[in-house]
Image 1 (cartoon, rainbow, N blue to C red):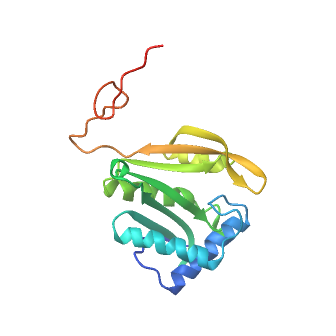
Image 2: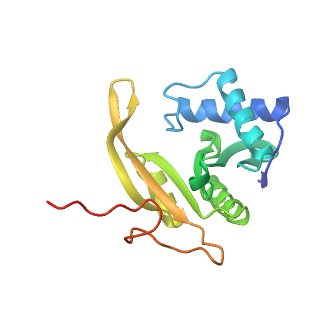
Length: 195
């Protein structure tokens, strides 16, 4: 069984159809990738088109995993909006078709996205994951991501509410970057108020 990764910048009919089949099957099997119900082809085509448009602008990248020549997994990074966040990106739509589970596609895809984002000069990758998706959380932790926040009951699937777990991975900083953090002073600083 051969597994290969590809980084498309445009999508032909075959790519759009294969990505749709993966996304639809993952959600139908209970996967938590942003759609409460299996998405229609128009929805997945719009997502692929949006990510690839941003890819051509240098603000995203989509990777697909082909198993024996057929797309069976996806992942992407998308740059955060606004100048002050342009050094960060969101990892998203990490999927493995149910027929390809157990092949290690998740770790392969996330590792590839991390390497690609680092090479693109990004400093942080963030992600959101449903609180009950313990397998995905463990995978992200094995690959170096750490939880930085949790918004209780923020994800709605019908009448059921799940926690949104926010995780991040530092990719490193270019020479000359000053790490000010939460220290007093600097742009945007304000003094503490007396009690």
